[in-house]
Amino acid sequence: MKFYLMTDLHFFSKRNWLADPYKWTRKPEQMQARESEEIIREAFDIVLADKETNTVIIPGDLTSNGEKTSHEDLLKIFEEYTAKGLRILVTTSTHDYRQKIPDAFSAEDLHGAMSFGYDENYEFKRFIECVPREKLRGMYAPYGRDKAVSVHEFSMSYTYDLDDEHRLLAINDDYMTNPEKNHRRGFSNDQYEWIFGQINKAKAEGKKIVAVTHHPLLTPSPIYMLIGKNDMLDRNLNVASALADAGVNVIFTGHSHIHDIEYHTSKNGNLLYDISTSALVGYPPAMRKIEYRDDGKVDVKTIVIQNLSRFDLKGQSLPEYCKESFFGMVKSMIGAMSKDFRTFAIYANSISIRYWTTYQFWWIFKAFGKFVNSLTLGKVYKVCKKESGLTKEDIAPIKDKKIVPIIVGFVEKLFAGNADIAPDTAEFKIIMGTVAILDDIVKSLGIKLKGLLGYSTLKEVVEPLVYNNGIDDYNALIDPLTPPEAKDPLPEFKSNKGSAIIIGLIISILLALPVLIPVGLVFGVLIALRGTTLFNPYKGKNRKVLPPTVD
Ligand SMILES: [Fe+2]
Ligand SMILES: [Fe+2]
Image (tube, rainbow, N blue to C red; front, side, top):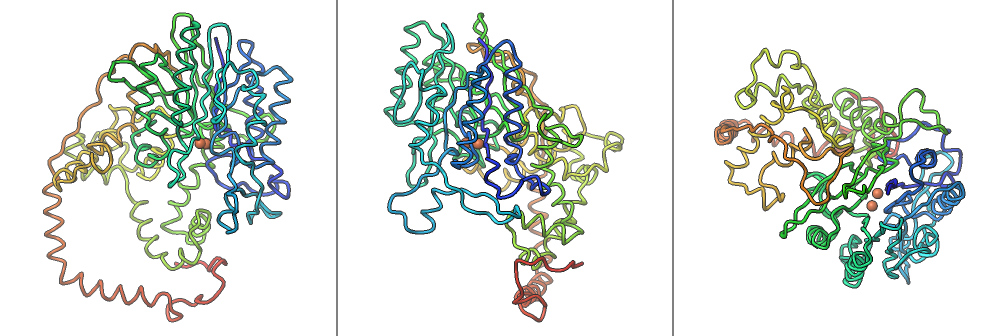
């Protein structure tokens, strides 16, 4: 039995622009809102052309933010492709509605029911009406629930027979798990009972479960657990173990927009594989083709959409186009930070740092930018010569390689999966040698990282961003009952410089104190004066206007 899985379509109707959205140069963004229709149509065309299956499963975040326009237009696309022969099965999630609070009277409350579109100049955002959650019930009923075996009414979850042997368990996990923090990422007790009741029912009827939900059960990367802890399914590991013990060993998730495969072992020794798929309109613009094989294995393949037939990518591939939109801005912004005030100020403004603030603190940005942009592998090597075990000859070919693109590369690979700086390369040794020094500093300071981060060392967090030593995130043949084959462990890097570095720092600070105190005072006075007309000729002028170029 085969099907396609795509998620986080984040469809944004072109009606949310007052004028033709292609009139302007595009704005950098994580999700390609403007091209979302062209990408979704391309993905559906690929499925239509596939003679092996016509089934598409989509676990949530169908629209950008629940705009009524986006839902209406997406449903038209669904209708069109259903008529052409696709079987589309969906659940909705938190990006598919905005709840209007009854008795709303403050502007903030009203916000809850509105999203944003663009004006005639693709500039100022204007309100767009969103649908409340209840409306989704009827809107998306034709896409799974109408022909369900069982429906959990409140959550809109359902089971659906994909064929004679396989039953889809489509879980909507937007139950309000923490009303104070507005967390909607789990199940009610009642829903939990329904889920396990359905698993038992399927077993009794001899059906295999194909499970999907929106939020991740297993963190796609340790760093995601640090920055996106509130994005995991509520009580994620408990649910993962319970599913594994109930005989559901594979689940498909979205939400994180990360392309990744992880597994978890319950206390009883049962496995759960969480197959997380990148956002279709994000980076990489990918979907998966899945086969539940007769031998019990699950064959997972990735299809990255390469071209768009309805939009001119001007020679770029779609992954390049999406990558540039997502990360190009970060690279250009850091690049401009050391030398080009105007460019940097424009980029900074796009992430809500005011021109005025950039202007006032340009000297700090510039100093930091100069430092960061000057870092090369050769310079870092000087610090971790011993730890990396590399000789001067080893690093000669890469010594001028800049650090900034390497760090941006970590973030790219966090989303794209399959981080690939191989353990035998000088890059890997320099990065992990440096991390070993940082870990020794932390250890020497007596800081217990486990309590702070949930991980005992920085190495545990950084290493997966450098090299994927786990399951191939793109294509894998999964045996739901067997853990993946063990791979050779990655090389270890040790450092004992931590305490020496700390003592050195303390001595330097003590020695410099007689100089630092007066310099600090002078700086304090200068900073205080920067906001006055004495130092700032733009004081009192329109703060939305970009100040002139400064050195
Ligand atoms: Fe999403
Ligand atoms: Fe989401």
